Amino acid sequence: MGENNRVIIFDTTLRDGEQSPGASMNLEEKLEVARALRDLRVDVIEAGFPIASPGDFEAVQAVARAIEGPIICGLARCRPEDIDRAAEALQPAARKRIHVFLATSAIHREFKLRMTKEEILRWAVEGVKRAKDYCEDVEFSPEDAARTELDFLCEVVEKAIEAGATTINIPDTVGYAMPQQYGQIFRYLREHVRGIDKVVLSAHCHDDLGLAVANSLAALLEGARQVECTINGIGERAGNCALEEVVMALKVRQDFFGLTTQIDTRRLYPTSRLVSTITGLQVQRNKAIVGQNAFAHEAGIHQHGILAHQATYEIMKPEDVGRSSSDLVLGKHSGRHALRAHAERLGYHLGEEQLDRVFEAFKRLADKKKTIYDADLQALIEGILHDGRPEMWKLVAFHTSAGSGVIPTAAVCVQRADGQQFQDAACGDGPIDAVFRTLMRITGIAAQLRDFQVRSVSQGEDAQGEATVEAEYRGRLYRGRATSTDIIEAGALAFVSVLNQIAWREHAGVSTAPVAETISQP
Ligand code: KIV
Ligand code: ZN
Image (tube, rainbow, N blue to C red):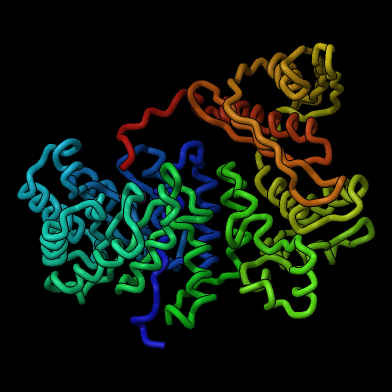
Protein backbone atom coordinates (compact mmCIF):
# COMPACT_ATOMS: atom_id res chain seq x y z
CA MET A 1 0.00 0.00 0.00
CA GLY A 2 1.47 3.38 -1.01
CA GLU A 3 2.52 6.01 1.53
CA ASN A 4 -0.34 8.22 0.42
CA ASN A 5 -2.78 5.77 1.96
CA ARG A 6 -1.29 6.04 5.41
CA VAL A 7 -3.25 8.14 7.91
CA ILE A 8 -1.29 10.01 10.57
CA ILE A 9 -2.89 9.68 14.01
CA PHE A 10 -2.35 12.91 15.94
CA ASP A 11 -3.43 12.40 19.53
CA THR A 12 -4.46 15.46 21.51
CA THR A 13 -5.72 13.75 24.69
CA LEU A 14 -3.12 15.65 26.72
CA ARG A 15 -4.06 19.03 25.20
CA ASP A 16 -7.61 19.33 23.81
CA GLY A 17 -8.67 16.26 25.84
CA GLU A 18 -7.35 17.73 29.04
CA GLN A 19 -9.56 20.77 28.41
CA SER A 20 -12.61 18.60 29.26
CA PRO A 21 -14.19 19.99 32.39
CA GLY A 22 -12.77 18.02 35.32
CA ALA A 23 -10.19 16.10 33.29
CA SER A 24 -7.02 17.83 34.42
CA MET A 25 -4.06 15.52 35.03
CA ASN A 26 -0.92 15.96 37.05
CA LEU A 27 2.56 15.57 35.61
CA GLU A 28 2.98 11.90 36.54
CA GLU A 29 -0.44 11.08 35.10
CA LYS A 30 0.35 12.90 31.85
CA LEU A 31 3.57 10.94 31.52
CA GLU A 32 1.71 7.72 32.06
CA VAL A 33 -0.80 8.59 29.35
CA ALA A 34 2.05 9.62 27.03
CA ARG A 35 3.75 6.23 27.55
CA ALA A 36 0.47 4.46 26.75
CA LEU A 37 0.07 6.58 23.58
CA ARG A 38 3.59 5.67 22.51
CA ASP A 39 2.78 1.96 23.04
CA LEU A 40 -0.44 2.44 21.09
CA ARG A 41 1.83 3.74 18.29
CA VAL A 42 0.23 7.11 17.67
CA ASP A 43 2.27 9.24 15.25
CA VAL A 44 2.03 12.56 17.07
CA ILE A 45 1.38 13.39 20.73
CA GLU A 46 0.17 16.92 21.35
CA ALA A 47 1.42 17.20 24.90
CA GLY A 48 0.05 20.61 25.88
CA PHE A 49 -0.06 24.35 25.42
CA PRO A 50 3.18 25.49 27.06
CA ILE A 51 2.34 29.18 27.54
CA ALA A 52 -0.98 28.33 29.23
CA SER A 53 0.52 27.63 32.66
CA PRO A 54 3.77 26.52 34.29
CA GLY A 55 2.18 23.06 34.70
CA ASP A 56 1.51 22.81 30.97
CA PHE A 57 5.06 23.88 30.18
CA GLU A 58 6.53 21.27 32.53
CA ALA A 59 4.29 18.55 31.12
CA VAL A 60 5.31 19.24 27.51
CA GLN A 61 8.96 19.36 28.55
CA ALA A 62 8.70 16.12 30.54
CA VAL A 63 6.96 14.30 27.68
CA ALA A 64 9.57 15.68 25.23
CA ARG A 65 12.33 14.31 27.48
CA ALA A 66 10.82 10.92 28.25
CA ILE A 67 8.97 9.75 25.17
CA GLU A 68 10.79 8.46 22.13
CA GLY A 69 9.13 7.37 18.92
CA PRO A 70 6.20 9.69 18.24
CA ILE A 71 6.59 13.35 17.27
CA ILE A 72 5.96 15.53 20.34
CA CYS A 73 3.92 18.62 19.61
CA GLY A 74 3.28 21.83 21.55
CA LEU A 75 0.50 24.33 20.85
CA ALA A 76 1.04 28.08 20.48
CA ARG A 77 -0.97 31.08 19.36
CA CYS A 78 0.60 33.10 16.53
CA ARG A 79 2.42 35.24 19.08
CA PRO A 80 6.18 35.39 19.57
CA GLU A 81 6.03 34.69 23.32
CA ASP A 82 3.83 31.60 22.80
CA ILE A 83 6.04 30.19 20.06
CA ASP A 84 9.26 30.81 22.00
CA ARG A 85 7.77 29.08 25.05
CA ALA A 86 6.60 26.10 22.98
CA ALA A 87 10.03 25.78 21.39
CA GLU A 88 11.69 25.89 24.82
CA ALA A 89 9.42 23.15 26.19
CA LEU A 90 9.98 20.96 23.12
CA GLN A 91 13.73 21.45 23.11
CA PRO A 92 14.58 17.95 24.50
CA ALA A 93 12.37 16.08 22.00
CA ALA A 94 14.07 13.93 19.39
CA ARG A 95 11.18 14.63 16.97
CA LYS A 96 9.19 17.80 17.53
CA ARG A 97 6.42 19.89 16.04
CA ILE A 98 5.16 23.38 16.82
CA HIS A 99 1.44 23.81 16.21
CA VAL A 100 0.42 27.43 15.72
CA PHE A 101 -3.17 28.55 15.48
CA LEU A 102 -5.12 31.73 14.75
CA ALA A 103 -8.86 32.13 14.31
CA THR A 104 -10.04 33.03 10.81
CA SER A 105 -13.87 33.02 10.84
CA ALA A 106 -15.74 36.34 10.61
CA ILE A 107 -17.26 35.94 14.06
CA HIS A 108 -13.87 35.30 15.68
CA ARG A 109 -12.18 38.05 13.69
CA GLU A 110 -14.78 40.60 14.63
CA PHE A 111 -15.66 39.76 18.23
CA LYS A 112 -12.74 37.82 19.69
CA LEU A 113 -9.66 39.11 17.93
CA ARG A 114 -10.92 42.46 16.60
CA MET A 115 -8.59 42.02 13.65
CA THR A 116 -9.01 42.64 9.93
CA LYS A 117 -8.38 39.95 7.31
CA GLU A 118 -5.08 41.64 6.44
CA GLU A 119 -3.95 41.50 10.05
CA ILE A 120 -4.90 37.83 10.30
CA LEU A 121 -2.86 37.06 7.19
CA ARG A 122 0.14 38.93 8.56
CA TRP A 123 0.02 37.29 11.99
CA ALA A 124 -0.44 33.82 10.51
CA VAL A 125 2.60 34.24 8.27
CA GLU A 126 4.73 35.68 11.05
CA GLY A 127 3.66 32.91 13.42
CA VAL A 128 4.52 30.13 10.99
CA LYS A 129 7.88 31.76 10.14
CA ARG A 130 8.85 32.16 13.75
CA ALA A 131 7.95 28.52 14.51
CA LYS A 132 9.94 27.48 11.45
CA ASP A 133 13.04 29.17 12.93
CA TYR A 134 12.86 26.54 15.71
CA CYS A 135 11.82 23.43 13.84
CA GLU A 136 11.17 22.08 10.40
CA ASP A 137 7.86 20.48 11.32
CA VAL A 138 5.23 23.24 11.71
CA GLU A 139 1.47 22.80 11.77
CA PHE A 140 -0.88 25.69 11.16
CA SER A 141 -4.55 25.73 12.24
CA PRO A 142 -6.99 28.42 11.11
CA GLU A 143 -9.22 28.12 14.19
CA ASP A 144 -12.95 27.87 13.38
CA ALA A 145 -11.96 27.04 9.79
CA ALA A 146 -15.24 25.22 9.20
CA ARG A 147 -17.12 28.52 9.58
CA THR A 148 -14.61 30.61 7.64
CA GLU A 149 -15.43 32.05 4.19
CA LEU A 150 -13.87 29.60 1.71
CA ASP A 151 -12.01 32.21 -0.34
CA PHE A 152 -10.43 33.72 2.78
CA LEU A 153 -9.60 30.25 4.12
CA CYS A 154 -7.79 29.49 0.85
CA GLU A 155 -5.84 32.73 1.12
CA VAL A 156 -4.72 32.07 4.71
CA VAL A 157 -3.80 28.47 3.98
CA GLU A 158 -1.81 29.44 0.88
CA LYS A 159 0.14 32.07 2.81
CA ALA A 160 0.80 29.64 5.69
CA ILE A 161 2.18 27.10 3.21
CA GLU A 162 4.39 29.74 1.58
CA ALA A 163 5.68 30.65 5.05
CA GLY A 164 6.73 27.05 5.64
CA ALA A 165 3.84 25.14 7.27
CA THR A 166 4.15 21.41 6.64
CA THR A 167 0.72 20.40 7.99
CA ILE A 168 -2.49 22.37 7.51
CA ASN A 169 -5.17 21.53 10.02
CA ILE A 170 -8.82 22.48 9.38
CA PRO A 171 -10.56 22.68 12.76
CA ASP A 172 -14.29 22.43 13.16
CA THR A 173 -13.79 24.21 16.46
CA VAL A 174 -17.45 24.38 17.46
CA GLY A 175 -18.65 21.07 16.00
CA TYR A 176 -20.91 22.80 13.48
CA ALA A 177 -19.99 21.08 10.21
CA MET A 178 -21.88 18.33 8.41
CA PRO A 179 -19.86 15.45 6.96
CA GLN A 180 -20.44 16.25 3.28
CA GLN A 181 -19.83 19.95 3.81
CA TYR A 182 -16.67 19.38 5.88
CA GLY A 183 -15.35 17.01 3.20
CA GLN A 184 -16.04 19.64 0.54
CA ILE A 185 -13.83 22.16 2.36
CA PHE A 186 -10.90 19.79 1.85
CA ARG A 187 -11.82 19.27 -1.79
CA TYR A 188 -12.08 23.03 -2.33
CA LEU A 189 -8.71 23.66 -0.70
CA ARG A 190 -7.09 20.96 -2.80
CA GLU A 191 -8.52 22.50 -5.96
CA HIS A 192 -7.80 26.15 -5.18
CA VAL A 193 -4.69 26.47 -3.03
CA ARG A 194 -1.26 26.68 -4.61
CA GLY A 195 1.26 24.32 -2.97
CA ILE A 196 -1.43 22.27 -1.21
CA ASP A 197 -0.01 19.00 -2.52
CA LYS A 198 3.23 19.69 -0.60
CA VAL A 199 1.56 19.58 2.83
CA VAL A 200 -0.40 17.10 4.91
CA LEU A 201 -4.04 18.06 5.38
CA SER A 202 -5.49 17.36 8.79
CA ALA A 203 -9.00 17.05 10.27
CA HIS A 204 -9.78 18.34 13.77
CA CYS A 205 -13.43 17.87 14.72
CA HIS A 206 -15.46 18.56 17.83
CA ASP A 207 -18.49 16.50 18.71
CA ASP A 208 -21.17 19.06 19.55
CA LEU A 209 -23.61 17.46 17.10
CA GLY A 210 -22.20 13.95 17.57
CA LEU A 211 -20.49 14.10 14.16
CA ALA A 212 -16.79 14.38 15.00
CA VAL A 213 -15.90 10.88 13.78
CA ALA A 214 -18.16 11.09 10.71
CA ASN A 215 -16.69 14.48 9.79
CA SER A 216 -13.12 13.22 10.20
CA LEU A 217 -13.83 10.24 7.96
CA ALA A 218 -15.43 12.55 5.37
CA ALA A 219 -12.23 14.63 5.36
CA LEU A 220 -10.14 11.50 4.80
CA LEU A 221 -12.27 10.67 1.76
CA GLU A 222 -11.39 14.10 0.38
CA GLY A 223 -7.65 13.81 0.84
CA ALA A 224 -6.91 14.56 4.52
CA ARG A 225 -4.15 12.29 5.76
CA GLN A 226 -4.00 13.28 9.42
CA VAL A 227 -6.76 12.97 12.03
CA GLU A 228 -6.62 14.80 15.35
CA CYS A 229 -8.37 12.81 18.03
CA THR A 230 -8.47 11.86 21.69
CA ILE A 231 -8.83 8.65 23.66
CA ASN A 232 -12.51 8.07 24.54
CA GLY A 233 -13.29 11.25 22.56
CA ILE A 234 -12.69 13.42 25.63
CA GLY A 235 -12.32 17.14 25.07
CA GLU A 236 -13.78 20.59 25.30
CA ARG A 237 -17.64 20.51 25.71
CA ALA A 238 -18.98 17.38 23.93
CA GLY A 239 -15.43 16.28 23.16
CA ASN A 240 -13.27 15.56 20.14
CA CYS A 241 -13.15 12.83 17.51
CA ALA A 242 -12.66 9.51 19.37
CA LEU A 243 -9.36 7.91 18.38
CA GLU A 244 -10.56 4.34 18.91
CA GLU A 245 -13.62 4.90 16.70
CA VAL A 246 -11.87 6.51 13.76
CA VAL A 247 -9.05 3.95 13.85
CA MET A 248 -11.43 0.97 13.96
CA ALA A 249 -13.65 2.46 11.24
CA LEU A 250 -10.59 2.59 8.99
CA LYS A 251 -9.54 -0.94 9.95
CA VAL A 252 -12.95 -2.64 9.75
CA ARG A 253 -13.89 -0.80 6.54
CA GLN A 254 -10.50 -1.02 4.89
CA ASP A 255 -12.43 -2.20 1.81
CA PHE A 256 -14.22 1.17 1.68
CA PHE A 257 -11.50 3.65 2.65
CA GLY A 258 -8.37 1.85 1.45
CA LEU A 259 -6.44 3.62 4.21
CA THR A 260 -4.23 2.36 7.04
CA THR A 261 -2.83 3.58 10.35
CA GLN A 262 0.06 2.22 12.36
CA ILE A 263 -2.01 1.91 15.55
CA ASP A 264 -1.66 -1.30 17.56
CA THR A 265 -5.40 -1.75 17.95
CA ARG A 266 -4.96 -4.35 20.73
CA ARG A 267 -3.81 -1.45 22.93
CA LEU A 268 -7.06 0.52 22.40
CA TYR A 269 -9.02 -0.92 25.30
CA PRO A 270 -6.22 -0.79 27.92
CA THR A 271 -5.47 2.80 26.88
CA SER A 272 -9.13 3.75 27.13
CA ARG A 273 -9.27 2.27 30.64
CA LEU A 274 -6.13 4.09 31.68
CA VAL A 275 -7.40 7.48 30.48
CA SER A 276 -10.77 6.90 32.11
CA THR A 277 -9.15 5.95 35.41
CA ILE A 278 -6.74 8.87 35.41
CA THR A 279 -9.23 11.53 34.36
CA GLY A 280 -12.18 10.11 36.28
CA LEU A 281 -14.28 10.53 33.10
CA GLN A 282 -16.24 7.34 32.81
CA VAL A 283 -16.90 5.80 29.44
CA GLN A 284 -20.61 5.42 28.67
CA ARG A 285 -21.71 1.78 28.66
CA ASN A 286 -22.81 1.70 25.04
CA LYS A 287 -19.84 3.67 23.68
CA ALA A 288 -18.51 2.15 20.44
CA ILE A 289 -15.34 0.01 20.74
CA VAL A 290 -14.53 0.61 24.41
CA GLY A 291 -17.91 0.78 26.21
CA GLN A 292 -18.82 -2.02 28.58
CA ASN A 293 -21.62 -3.20 26.28
CA ALA A 294 -19.78 -2.78 22.98
CA PHE A 295 -19.41 -6.55 22.54
CA ALA A 296 -22.23 -7.77 24.79
CA HIS A 297 -25.07 -9.69 23.17
CA GLU A 298 -28.30 -9.80 25.09
CA ALA A 299 -30.95 -10.99 22.64
CA GLY A 300 -31.22 -14.79 22.44
CA ILE A 301 -31.32 -14.70 18.66
CA HIS A 302 -28.03 -12.76 18.61
CA GLN A 303 -26.39 -15.12 21.11
CA HIS A 304 -27.46 -18.07 19.00
CA GLY A 305 -26.03 -16.45 15.87
CA ILE A 306 -22.74 -15.59 17.57
CA LEU A 307 -22.32 -19.17 18.78
CA ALA A 308 -22.97 -20.47 15.28
CA HIS A 309 -20.57 -17.99 13.67
CA GLN A 310 -18.99 -14.93 15.30
CA ALA A 311 -19.40 -12.77 12.18
CA THR A 312 -23.21 -13.04 12.21
CA TYR A 313 -23.49 -10.17 14.70
CA GLU A 314 -19.91 -8.98 15.21
CA ILE A 315 -18.04 -6.85 12.67
CA MET A 316 -14.79 -7.02 14.65
CA LYS A 317 -13.42 -9.30 17.33
CA PRO A 318 -13.12 -8.09 20.93
CA GLU A 319 -9.49 -9.29 20.85
CA ASP A 320 -8.77 -6.87 17.97
CA VAL A 321 -9.25 -3.94 20.34
CA GLY A 322 -7.58 -5.56 23.34
CA ARG A 323 -10.64 -7.03 25.03
CA SER A 324 -10.97 -10.67 25.80
CA SER A 325 -13.70 -12.77 24.20
CA SER A 326 -13.98 -15.08 27.19
CA ASP A 327 -14.61 -12.59 29.91
CA LEU A 328 -14.42 -15.01 32.82
CA VAL A 329 -10.81 -15.11 33.84
CA LEU A 330 -9.78 -16.19 37.28
CA GLY A 331 -11.07 -17.76 40.47
CA LYS A 332 -10.05 -18.39 44.05
CA HIS A 333 -7.61 -21.15 43.14
CA SER A 334 -5.75 -19.36 40.38
CA GLY A 335 -2.06 -18.91 41.06
CA ARG A 336 0.49 -16.13 40.60
CA HIS A 337 1.52 -17.45 37.23
CA ALA A 338 -2.04 -17.37 35.84
CA LEU A 339 -2.53 -13.90 37.28
CA ARG A 340 0.60 -12.59 35.58
CA ALA A 341 -0.40 -14.19 32.26
CA HIS A 342 -3.88 -12.61 32.41
CA ALA A 343 -2.46 -9.23 33.40
CA GLU A 344 -0.09 -9.39 30.43
CA ARG A 345 -2.90 -10.26 28.07
CA LEU A 346 -4.71 -7.16 29.30
CA GLY A 347 -1.61 -5.10 28.60
CA TYR A 348 -0.12 -4.72 32.09
CA HIS A 349 3.55 -5.68 32.50
CA LEU A 350 3.91 -6.00 36.24
CA GLY A 351 7.22 -5.95 38.08
CA GLU A 352 7.77 -8.55 40.87
CA GLU A 353 6.84 -6.18 43.65
CA GLN A 354 3.73 -4.97 41.81
CA LEU A 355 2.74 -8.56 41.09
CA ASP A 356 3.04 -9.38 44.82
CA ARG A 357 0.68 -6.53 45.70
CA VAL A 358 -1.77 -7.36 42.94
CA PHE A 359 -1.74 -11.05 43.91
CA GLU A 360 -2.40 -10.25 47.55
CA ALA A 361 -5.33 -7.96 46.61
CA PHE A 362 -6.58 -10.56 44.13
CA LYS A 363 -6.70 -13.24 46.85
CA ARG A 364 -8.63 -10.90 49.13
CA LEU A 365 -11.09 -10.16 46.34
CA ALA A 366 -11.44 -13.85 45.42
CA ASP A 367 -12.53 -14.54 48.99
CA LYS A 368 -15.42 -12.12 48.57
CA LYS A 369 -16.24 -12.69 44.91
CA LYS A 370 -16.67 -16.06 43.21
CA THR A 371 -15.84 -15.11 39.65
CA ILE A 372 -13.29 -12.52 38.72
CA TYR A 373 -13.79 -10.92 35.33
CA ASP A 374 -11.32 -8.97 33.21
CA ALA A 375 -12.89 -5.72 34.36
CA ASP A 376 -12.42 -6.73 38.03
CA LEU A 377 -8.79 -7.53 37.42
CA GLN A 378 -8.24 -4.30 35.54
CA ALA A 379 -9.83 -2.22 38.29
CA LEU A 380 -7.68 -3.99 40.84
CA ILE A 381 -4.42 -3.58 38.93
CA GLU A 382 -5.08 0.06 38.09
CA GLY A 383 -5.93 0.80 41.70
CA ILE A 384 -2.58 -0.61 42.77
CA LEU A 385 -0.50 0.89 39.97
CA HIS A 386 -1.86 4.37 40.67
CA ASP A 387 -1.49 4.13 44.35
CA GLY A 388 2.27 4.42 44.55
CA ARG A 389 2.40 7.29 47.00
CA PRO A 390 2.99 6.80 50.69
CA GLU A 391 -0.31 6.81 52.55
CA MET A 392 -0.86 9.21 55.39
CA TRP A 393 -4.20 7.62 56.31
CA LYS A 394 -5.46 4.07 56.06
CA LEU A 395 -9.05 2.99 56.57
CA VAL A 396 -9.17 0.45 59.41
CA ALA A 397 -12.90 -0.05 59.99
CA PHE A 398 -16.22 1.67 59.59
CA HIS A 399 -19.84 1.15 60.51
CA THR A 400 -22.84 2.98 59.09
CA SER A 401 -26.50 3.03 59.91
CA ALA A 402 -29.18 4.36 57.61
CA GLY A 403 -32.77 3.68 56.66
CA SER A 404 -36.08 5.51 56.44
CA GLY A 405 -36.87 7.49 59.57
CA VAL A 406 -33.29 7.09 60.82
CA ILE A 407 -30.57 9.76 60.90
CA PRO A 408 -27.75 8.40 58.75
CA THR A 409 -24.62 8.06 60.89
CA ALA A 410 -21.14 6.63 60.50
CA ALA A 411 -18.40 5.58 62.88
CA VAL A 412 -14.96 5.37 61.30
CA CYS A 413 -11.52 4.26 62.46
CA VAL A 414 -8.39 5.23 60.52
CA GLN A 415 -4.68 4.73 61.10
CA ARG A 416 -2.12 7.48 60.56
CA ALA A 417 1.26 6.74 58.95
CA ASP A 418 2.92 6.73 62.41
CA GLY A 419 0.67 3.84 63.48
CA GLN A 420 -1.67 5.83 65.72
CA GLN A 421 -5.36 5.07 65.30
CA PHE A 422 -8.19 7.60 65.46
CA GLN A 423 -11.92 7.11 65.58
CA ASP A 424 -14.90 9.40 65.43
CA ALA A 425 -18.52 9.52 64.30
CA ALA A 426 -20.77 11.94 62.40
CA CYS A 427 -24.21 12.27 60.81
CA GLY A 428 -24.77 13.02 57.14
CA ASP A 429 -27.29 13.20 54.32
CA GLY A 430 -26.80 9.47 53.76
CA PRO A 431 -24.36 6.79 54.95
CA ILE A 432 -21.66 7.73 52.44
CA ASP A 433 -21.92 11.42 53.27
CA ALA A 434 -21.69 10.49 56.98
CA VAL A 435 -18.48 8.51 56.31
CA PHE A 436 -16.97 11.45 54.38
CA ARG A 437 -17.85 13.90 57.15
CA THR A 438 -16.31 11.63 59.78
CA LEU A 439 -13.13 11.26 57.74
CA MET A 440 -12.88 15.05 57.42
CA ARG A 441 -13.35 15.47 61.19
CA ILE A 442 -10.60 12.99 61.94
CA THR A 443 -8.06 14.28 59.41
CA GLY A 444 -8.93 17.95 59.84
CA ILE A 445 -9.07 18.35 56.05
CA ALA A 446 -12.23 20.24 55.11
CA ALA A 447 -12.51 19.34 51.43
CA GLN A 448 -15.55 20.30 49.34
CA LEU A 449 -17.14 17.32 47.62
CA ARG A 450 -17.65 18.16 43.94
CA ASP A 451 -18.66 14.84 42.43
CA PHE A 452 -19.34 11.30 43.53
CA GLN A 453 -20.16 8.42 41.22
CA VAL A 454 -20.51 4.68 41.61
CA ARG A 455 -20.67 2.16 38.80
CA SER A 456 -20.54 -1.57 38.65
CA VAL A 457 -17.22 -2.84 37.31
CA SER A 458 -18.33 -6.26 36.10
CA GLN A 459 -21.47 -8.34 36.25
CA GLY A 460 -23.33 -10.56 38.70
CA GLU A 461 -24.83 -10.06 42.13
CA ASP A 462 -21.42 -9.85 43.75
CA ALA A 463 -20.08 -7.38 41.17
CA GLN A 464 -17.57 -4.87 42.46
CA GLY A 465 -18.59 -1.23 42.69
CA GLU A 466 -16.14 1.40 41.52
CA ALA A 467 -16.47 4.73 43.32
CA THR A 468 -14.99 7.95 41.98
CA VAL A 469 -14.78 10.97 44.25
CA GLU A 470 -13.84 14.46 43.17
CA ALA A 471 -13.21 17.02 45.88
CA GLU A 472 -11.79 20.53 46.00
CA TYR A 473 -9.31 21.75 48.55
CA ARG A 474 -7.80 25.23 48.46
CA GLY A 475 -8.88 25.74 44.87
CA ARG A 476 -7.37 22.51 43.58
CA LEU A 477 -9.31 19.45 42.42
CA TYR A 478 -8.38 16.01 43.70
CA ARG A 479 -9.73 12.75 42.38
CA GLY A 480 -9.84 9.38 44.12
CA ARG A 481 -11.05 6.03 42.92
CA ALA A 482 -11.50 2.68 44.61
CA THR A 483 -13.29 -0.59 44.09
CA SER A 484 -14.93 -2.94 46.53
CA THR A 485 -17.81 -5.38 46.62
CA ASP A 486 -19.36 -2.96 49.15
CA ILE A 487 -20.13 0.45 47.60
CA ILE A 488 -19.91 2.32 50.91
CA GLU A 489 -16.44 0.88 51.42
CA ALA A 490 -15.53 1.81 47.81
CA GLY A 491 -16.69 5.39 48.52
CA ALA A 492 -14.78 5.53 51.81
CA LEU A 493 -11.58 4.21 50.20
CA ALA A 494 -11.88 6.66 47.29
CA PHE A 495 -12.30 9.54 49.74
CA VAL A 496 -9.34 8.36 51.84
CA SER A 497 -7.31 8.37 48.61
CA VAL A 498 -8.31 12.02 48.05
CA LEU A 499 -7.36 12.91 51.64
CA ASN A 500 -4.02 11.14 51.18
CA GLN A 501 -3.30 13.15 48.04
CA ILE A 502 -4.05 16.38 49.90
CA ALA A 503 -1.93 15.28 52.88
CA TRP A 504 0.84 14.20 50.50
CA ARG A 505 0.97 17.64 48.90
CA GLU A 506 1.15 19.27 52.33
CA HIS A 507 3.74 16.80 53.57
CA ALA A 508 5.94 16.96 50.49
CA GLY A 509 6.00 20.71 50.78
CA VAL A 510 4.10 21.02 47.52
CA SER A 511 1.92 24.08 47.58
CA THR A 512 -1.78 23.37 47.99
CA ALA A 513 -2.57 26.95 46.96
CA PRO A 514 -4.73 27.35 43.84
CA VAL A 515 -2.80 27.31 40.59
CA ALA A 516 -3.46 30.53 38.71
CA GLU A 517 -4.10 29.92 35.04
CA THR A 518 -2.12 32.52 33.17
CA ILE A 519 -4.12 32.28 30.00
CA SER A 520 -7.48 30.98 28.87
CA GLN A 521 -7.40 27.84 26.73
CA PRO A 522 -8.35 27.96 23.02
O1 KIV B 1 -10.70 23.22 18.16
C1 KIV B 1 -9.76 23.94 17.78
O2 KIV B 1 -9.91 24.85 16.96
C2 KIV B 1 -8.45 23.69 18.36
C3 KIV B 1 -7.30 24.38 17.71
C4 KIV B 1 -6.38 24.97 18.70
C5 KIV B 1 -6.61 23.42 16.79
O3 KIV B 1 -8.33 22.91 19.28
ZN1 ZN C 1 -10.08 21.55 19.37
